[in-house]
Length: 548
Image 1: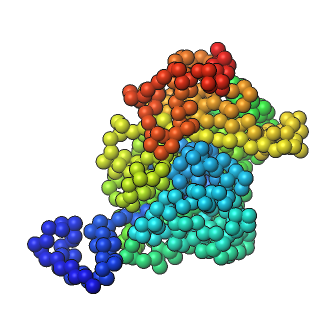
Image 2: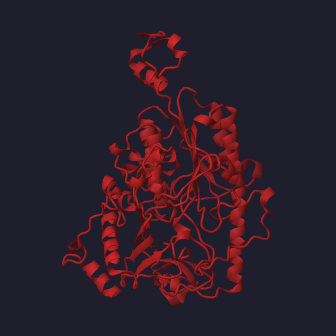
């Protein structure tokens, strides 16, 4: 046994005056952890992750309580982007803090490494929840959609519980609202279609409240709630089924117009859209909003419970999405996957200790930063991990230097197609996917691209290259052209083009610290043109000829 006696003369000023009068007796093997927990109390952390929630076309409008309880009570980041505009690669980036070229999840299939055995062996042990649990300080809880192929029997089924989670309530496969199976700590729990017992968003809210009521009060907690909304099949709770009856998809300047100077996949969309296609998009838009009302209720329930328990003031709450969405932009009916703002930009709201209310921040943030930030909040040295992202914890608490913050991030996507022609669009032949009845396809094998998204005082720019036979390039000046109507790849200054070209090459091969090096518009940026168009780089040589 070990005996610790502290009196009013103690120099251990991290203890409260109450604790200085206590005699702490503990087993020697556990004293260091208990003393550390009392000396350095860590905050709780809640991450609420939505599915396909855009910010560019009004996705946050239905979430009035969420904006009030999290955004107005803390900080809203206005330039937040995903590493890939697709569920599984993006979620893998959130969990690992890595870009897709480092975690190797490229699409939503098992073959694309989504929740595969390879993912389980190489990446799950180094996710940020695994770090939180490994060090024994945080109790961890997960509820909701994990990865699209989670529960696949070829990869362990629902019996597989990833490392890092003390409590595990994970949805089998992709988002649903009824008739689904949850893995409850590795055991299947089947749900039907009774609203009061089975509606998934409400079930997640109830499970989360139960966790908060029954968890240990001696240790901080990390809670991740991953809702199905507003992902299809867009089934609203009964009380919200008639909401927003007059709402339509926003008629922004890029709605229902031809992407004349864009990649061929965008150009093939039929313009103008048929009346039935527009009605289809409007209907989907309304249904998405209706599902979000239950998410708004979930947020309110969690915040209220934390407040009742006296834990709200010591809890960081993060609200975000895995990717954006589109409904009619550039005449594309509905989906994600594209390089444009509506698909890659997401909401990010945070409240918590030392975050002043009613703040907005325009600094560039990516979802690869969520893991490093959560670890930073929890007191871990992010530099000891192999994460590509960086912690924005100092930024939102006002202790960081915004002038040294990064100016660009990487966006990667690997297109998917079918080896046979789609029956709804046989004229396009094999190689396409996600096709609609009007013969508009949302994806293809050569819809594979990488982008540098830059946000700085000097530039608001997007530079993208496609990995196809054309080596097609798209460049947008978002300051002058916020709706990305004009591709300026062939008119932009050649020196800028070559520098962005070079920067993209660097980011596509980066890892950990090298992903956080200065961007083109940083004063510390170093550019060696010889690396761009040398004899050993035929792809870049072809690109140069294309842009002449």
